[in-house]
Length: 275
Image 1 (cartoon, rainbow, N blue to C red):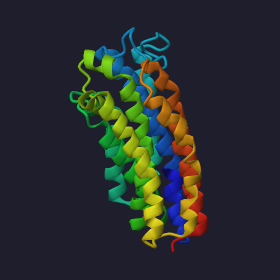
Image 2 (image 1 turned 180 degrees about the vertical axis):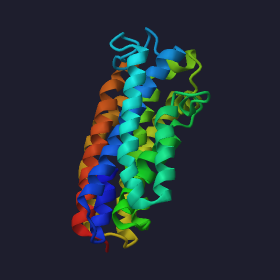
Image 3 (image 1 turned 90 degrees about the vertical axis):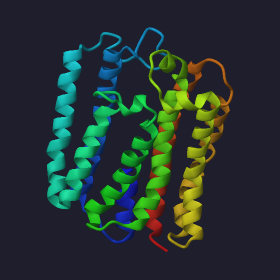
Image 4 (image 1 turned 135 degrees about the vertical axis):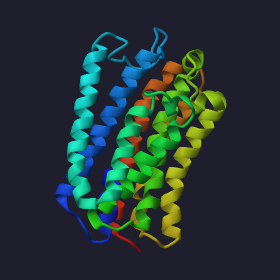
């Protein structure tokens, strides 16, 4: 999302290195905070049991204690806040509000009194913060204007990152249901979650075409379509059915797809510019 947000800024003739690095640092730190907080909260709530199908967790496997995870979470959030102060100095009160909201959302997915990830809102929050806020916010910190193209470009980026969470929740439908974790996948069921994944991937590839047809960007914005062949194997495995562990490689490859797509999209936007 940061790369695409920077590309939108470059397309209108703006690029500042230090704000770019700071935005990237905050985005990475908040992602780490989200993962550490999720590890800790799922362990405390009993979601991470011996039946867990995903990669090993630090707390559940005994690699780190709860105290160590808490210290790590505090350090990471503190660093994000420290770097974020520079971004607030650049962007003003709106960045402060978005920054606080992003930090809260990073740890509240499975933590706190009402973890939103346990109530079917995980995909919505991920799309908003790792899509709309991250892309448009990065552009704003470069241009100090809210660029409409940044919000449009955020849609496919947010969709692909959200698809990562969908796969995670699809894999864990049975174990989550047993522990009372009502993700959207649990609510929709296996077929519904598969359809959600298909929809998100499809949206990602429709948006660049729509932007070109609308005349908002040049043909260079179609560059991410070169990553389309990577989706074939993913769809095949997702719709095969069977052992949920089959989705662990899909989780990794969907993350890789989101990165490849974003790099190609960023190059297309930065090189081609606005139509």
